[in-house]
Length: 232
Image (cartoon, rainbow, N blue to C red):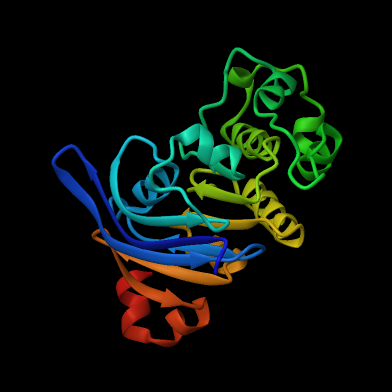
C-alpha cells in the first residue's frame, strides 16, 4: 500500500461540490505533482486530505491508518505536514520563533535541527532574528517549508510552492524537494508551473473540474500532443 492512498474523494464548500471521485496514491520518497488550472481543485484536494475548511467524503489512508474522519491535529501527529499556498507565517515572530512553533517530537528517532534547515535554506541563516513580516515572499516561502519540516513529517503536502517566486528561489525549492526525496519524505505538490513540475515530478496527476483527467509520468503526458496541449 502507498504511504498516502486516496480513493473516491469528494469535497464541498457549503453547497458547492468541488472534487468528484479523486483517487491517487503516493509512496514514501516519491513526488507526485497535481497539475491544473486555477479553480480546478488542486488546493481543495490538499485541504481535504488534511481535513481543513471543506466537507469531504471518501477513503483517505496514510501510513496504513484511515484518516478521513480524524481531526487536523491528529493527522499532523501521524506525520503528515502541510505547506499552504498563503504561507501563514507568524509575521510578528522571528525566523527562529516561527521554527520553534512548528516543532513536534521526532519520528523514528529522526528530527530536523535548526542548523540542518539553515543549510537547506541558506537565505534564512542570516535572518534568524528577523520578524516574518519583514521578509520577502520567497523568504517567507522558505520559512513556511522549514517550519513544516520542524514537525518531522513523513509526507508533505505543498500547495503552489513556486507561485510568484523569483527563478533563483524556485531553484532552491526544487533542490529542497530533491533533498527531502533523498531522505524518504513523500510529497504531493499542487502546481501550475509546468517547468518546475517537470523538474521534480516522479508522477503527474492532472486535475480538471474536480476530477482526475490524467495520471502517469510527465514523459507520457508530453508524448500525447493533444493531451499536452489541453492540459499544459
